[in-house]
Length: 315
Ligand SMILES: [Zn+2]
Image (tube, rainbow, N blue to C red):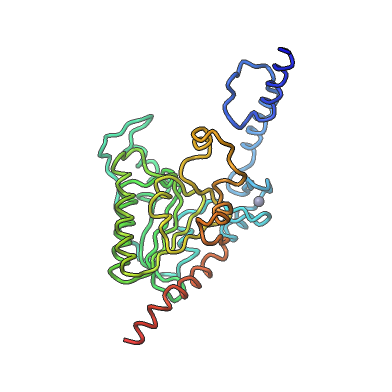
């Protein structure tokens, strides 16, 4: 009896070695380990800046081709991450973007120090991305529509929402309310920025407060969720859009799947926390491929502002 039980345990462990950290690393049966290490070193041999391996279909895609296709895999339509500036370029009419609060930067109010200080992290990301913080906001034209647009950038500290992201978006929402403009916010975020503690969490209430004044003015707000949109951002402005749309395959949720699994002690359904799953369950209204995004946004704006135009024409 005892021997068959041990065999069973061993078999289970070999079936899913990568899913969770191995609890008994002293066990001998890890035939897969050297293979993993080998594939990692192989990856490094590929010259950077010419080809990118698609994480979904493993095809090597020529970088130029990928850029021309708005960072979407030409073989399997996997949507790669895209920077906020590239996103704006793909949506907005040329030379119409007027950026707001471009110089706003975070202050290390808590004097937060982990492995590195918050100030040094900010400097590092500002240099790497050329951004001051994780969101770009401004007024622009999309098609014939003048709109207020906010675009988050996951490359800046995981698109985390600190006081600057919250303040810039709030000012954008307030400007849109004042000028009666439609609002589009494109989110990509790991959640609130822990380096700013409570100041980050307060942005959830602040942005939603501004959005409720915006809603009272009966103006349309479209929230676009991209991979990934989670936690504090998902629990605030990202989910209160009049229309909530997403890119294909985007990971969308509040807490991570492992945390939920451990808390609920239940198996999660397949496709959990993907845009497709949330469309089926009614949280989001549509999934739109990146290449069709601009046209579809214009159609939605036409529809959502039709009433306003009739009203202003009548008066
Ligand atoms: Zn692919």
